[in-house]
Image (cartoon, rainbow, N blue to C red; front, side):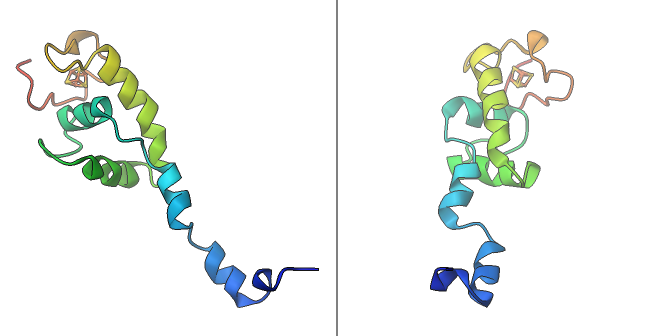
Length: 103
Ligand code: SF4
């Protein structure tokens, strides 16, 4: 027997849009490496908040914004260091505008 909330048009309306908590779980984690890479790559304005990272990720990968989290973190951790980024060795060097760097 179906639960009363699982019957009727209520289920249809509720299932067409992910709940707020589920949507948050799809977002990238708030991290300084990710924000720095997004900023230098020109995806957000310099000095933007962490929420700007989430909004940019939602625009770039609407089905799973968090899919950008790990690659951006890896780039930030290994090449896009806070001072003296290693742009020549960075995997996105060919397409990155290097905003705010001296390279
Ligand atoms: S090319 Fe340079 S500025 Fe751009 S993400 Fe890579 S290390 Fe950072």
